[in-house]
Amino acid sequence: MHEMAISESIVGILEEEARRQNFARVKKVRLEIGALVGIEQDALRFSFDVVTKGTLAEDAVLEIIATQARAWCMSCERVAVINHRYDVCPICGGQQLQVEAGDEMRIKDLEVD
Picture 1 (spheres, rainbow, N blue to C red):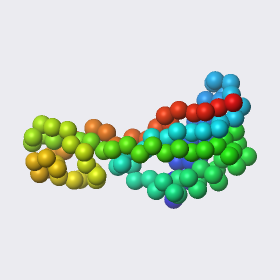
Picture 2: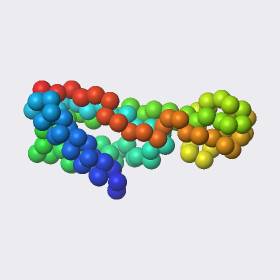
Picture 3: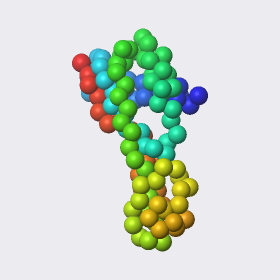
Picture 4: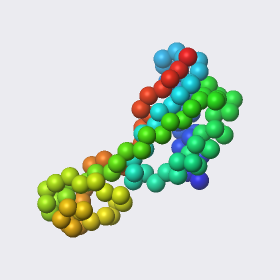
């Protein structure tokens, strides 16, 4: 379950930022996850709850913002929304797509004390 490792990484980032920015507690984490990342959101929420026990983020709310995947089609020279990495272009049926968005995951912002 790579969601557990991701949750552990998030806690590591939160601890580092707490030292840098001098806050003691995280109340909310807003996380953007692209459609192509392959994260099971329920598993991530569960893992986050488990991993944050006894940390500065214990009882913090994890808000997940799902973002669409977009790719540049080299055939029709347009940007199209895709659902999977190897989709064909929904505009022209072309198969040469370059992913522009949807394969990222980032902490958008935090609510802290």
